[in-house]
Length: 457
Image (cartoon, rainbow, N blue to C red):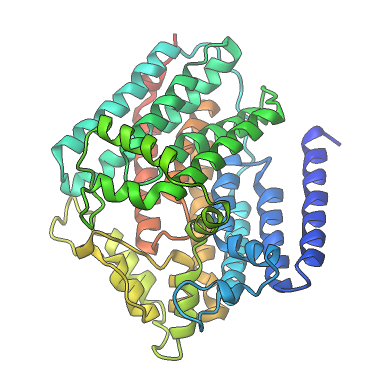
């Protein structure tokens, strides 16, 4: 038995122990939800931890969004339905159960198409200075795009090109660790600092990509010590809790008091304000934990839709996913007058609750699993989810069976996390984002060999 199999066996024993401890500690409340929650993580771990760490990390975050309130309810010895945000009738338990079932089917659908993938191999011929230059080029492209404002139909393509920086970051880590050239540490600091002036918590992006990179390299030629993963996870938790504690006041400052997701202050002002808020705001551990659980969890709107459909409004029999397919079949670059979808309006339509919409600078989506329920109900909702999984697995298969070096395949796979980052993604955004990025990747694979060769010495 190899070391990877031994690690998986230890993890599985750990999952069993976690379930038993929570089961008895939680006074046998939410038992079915707890069992499904632990099982979902177990399935994702066993299918992807060794075979495809990128999908493993991506789906683990989806699972965390589906189960966060389950674990929180068990620890607090209360019913999960008592944690509903909007109405007392919201069925959080059913939303969590269906989300977990959907993720399990999604995982198996990806797995059966996914090819056997070689671990990342050591490459000494990559030029780290050229990699840093390429990373800087992506950053520069981002600032140019931001200064130009609305790019119309070009936005999606430019955005995917900018996100390639995370694949380059992976290569910098891949080259830097063996050579003891730790430029990636400066990139981590840089990314965290520029996230200060972001309306959203983008600081987590670089930490997540670093974790994914180490998972990939740890399965190959490098052996990363567990304390490195613990350090990164701890940093992520610390920054996450700090952000939740100051988020509301800080966002109000960034937007100059307006109800919009825009930044109207400079970096120096933002930096000074965030330092002041960290020093001034008293840290309430319980309140911060509550906010963090509410922020991570994404089953409340699903729970409201279960209460609303089909009791008040009938199932749509596939129309939501069909509209998504029609939407992505008309690229905005070729159809500039294509209708802009207001996610909040769709969520209000299928939940019956009032939410802020695009006019208030807010977009709140129902999520792809919930939309599948709206379309097909709780017995057939897995149909589009299985098809989505088959698509994802097939795209990974095509990439890793291409004729470019495996290390470039891994690098081009890294940004997949940002194309499918959570349960909150609406179906048209999931499909549009994945297909657009896949198009760019396969253009690189087919026509970008000279550019990839330029990265080598």
